[in-house]
Image (cartoon, rainbow, N blue to C red):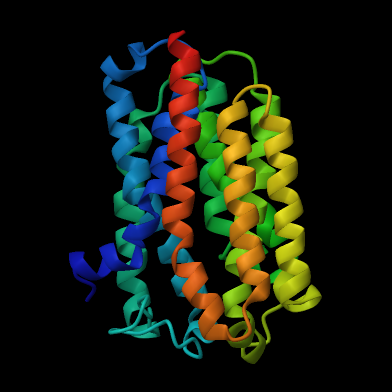
Length: 284
């Protein structure tokens, strides 16, 4: 059996804000339709969905298909940084994933772009880890799928809040930013992934090269978004440049992992600045 507390731990509470904020603030506010969406019942239903059930889907499937890698990873285990989903627990995790996600399908609006955005989220989030695609085992495709589900969440929020034209620049900048975020997250796992013979961008091009690529992608994303959110994009470029510089200077896995543990807080902070600037722009 898998208890509620176990499934919540599997869903990575420290990362809940990523998907939820992408939908609830960045996606919805970027539609620039004022704050009328706050009174819509669907907004609150899907705000909850992207806070918890969506993360049960993402990380539950990830942990099921990653067992052969995770069993070598020191940050996985009952008392470690993250849970280890053993084969005995996998059936129960699947039940949790299906039940907590299918309940929200009837609440989708009868609006094709919104439905397609939701389907895109499910597709990218599921097949990032799941067979037959298992994008995370395919360098470059792994970062693309990881970025794809975050961007799809934002597009879903955008349409649900009344957005009309497809947000092309936002999607491009978001994809670059999220690809960098994903590629960087693979760097601390180089040793464990190598033992499991899992190929990632970080393994193929190495620690320093991966960090430099991430650095470039963050800066490029900030440049693309500069016209829309000059303050947030400038701050994001500076903050992540500092993180990337500090990361490339680390000498041991322990030092790098310590920097990595600050990453969720830094992402949340930058995301809050992006949201605040979008809100100001939408109001004034």
